[in-house]
Structures are given as C-alpha cells and as structure tokens.
Amino acid sequence: MTATHLDSTADLMNRITTRLAGQLGLVTLSGRRRPAPPALVVVAHGSRDPRALSTVRDLLDRVRALRPGLPVHLGHIELNAPLLPDTLAGLGTAEAILVPLLLSRGYHVKRDIPEMAAASEVHARVAPALGPHPLLVDALHARLTEAGWPGTPARNSAVVLAAAGSRDPEAKTDTQRTADLLAARLGVPVLPAYATTATPTIPDAVRTLAARGFTRVAVASYFTAPGRFATECAQAAPWIASSPLGTHEGMAHLLLHRYDQTRATPAETLPELASA
Image 1 (cartoon, rainbow, N blue to C red):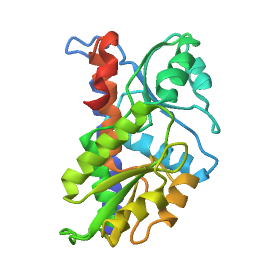
Image 2: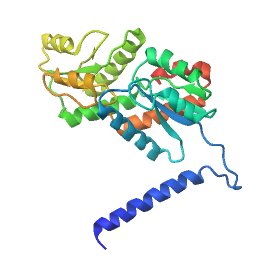
Image 3: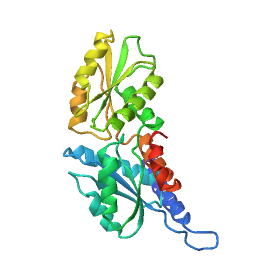
Image 4: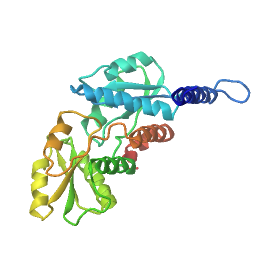
C-alpha cells in the first residue's frame, strides 16, 4: 500500500470520526437528542470579484470543520447569491445568530442586517462586527509576514492599515483601534487609511509617513476577501502589501467567537461586545 493511499485513508477516517463526534454531541447520555443549536448565518457584503465569493465559501468550510454539527449558512447584503433575505427565508422560523463578516461598525451592521432579520420569520440575533479584536491583529501580522515583513523591522519602517471606509464615525474609531493594536504588536507606527468615503486615502497616508522619514512603508490589507478595493490599495504600496485576511484561521475562530458571545449575552448588551 502506498504512502499516498495511507494518507488518503487516514484523512477519510479523520473526517468520519470528526463528523461522528459532532453528531454524538447532539445526543445526551440517556439517548435523548439535544436541542439543535441556533444556526450560524455569516453575512458577507458581496462583491463583483469572483475571488471574494470563493474565499468566503472556503472560510465557511473552515468554520464547519472547527464546529461539526453547527448549521452554517451564508447570506450576502448585495451583489452575490444567496442574498441574506433568501437565506433567512430558507430557515423558516428557526433560531439563528447572524454574524457580520464585516470588520467595523457601520450602516450595514447597524441598519441593513437588523432590518433584513426583522423582515424575516427567523428568530434572529445579530452579532457585533468582527473588529476590533486581537484575532484580527493575529491575521494581519501573519499576512504581513507572508508578504515579507521582517521579524525585526528597521527603524524607518511603518504600516498603512488599508480599510474600506465608512461615513460612520464609529467605523473609523474601530479601525483606529485595530491600527493601535497592530502598532503595539509590530513596534512601528500604523496609520489607518481608506479606499473610499473616509480620509486619509492610502496614497495620502503613504505620503504622510514618508514626510515623517519612514522610507519602508508596508500596506496591510484590512479586507476580508480579494476585490477591487484590496487590489487598488496594494498597488499604492511603496514597499510590500499583504493579502486580505481571507481564510486565515483567526477569521474562522473569530466568527465562532462572535457566535458564542452573542448566544450567551443578553440582547440589550450586545453593542458593548464590539471591542471585546
């Protein structure tokens, strides 16, 4: 028997064991079936870039692997199917927790997603945005390292944290908090900048850092998946640019963390979770 075949057999057995363990977790010692947990509905923004949908689907597969037995669904705010209202319609009157695949507070988190949930028959609760959170900093650091960020950066190094942008001032507050956390991790200045709507722009942030004497400026992509904004931000990098957060394991763990957090927290205190 070849090593390849042994590896394939071992992988198959591991998948079977994992799935069985997940099913057994739904059964009590007396043989009674436990109540099914609320479904996790990951709410992505949507993009015309086909890489975005592929990335989000791969990320959800990672979530399913981490939590066998948990129903995991995808819904989009716009541009991609399935749209969130269609996903919720398919759940009927089930219980669900909606976790935005969004990195900061803003109109989508505060208005769009709650309104779509309220218009459905689903018994839904909406989790806070993913950021700020240390797991996002883990992912940002890992992506920068993959792009060539050194273990010990030079004194003339700095980072532009490239985000999508929002008119909501709380979104800028969240992005600034992430920039502060990343700066503490890297030991260099990190300046947040935006692809649209908010200021400064990525080129402006690069020029600001250059004027302060930072000649090795990296752009950290603070996007959940590839797309036009992430591509344009990377093109503005004078040195290195990291990839979007994508399927980094920290993203999968954070989606489950927000799910668990929301499930365990009274609804009236959910807004306080945004920085937890």
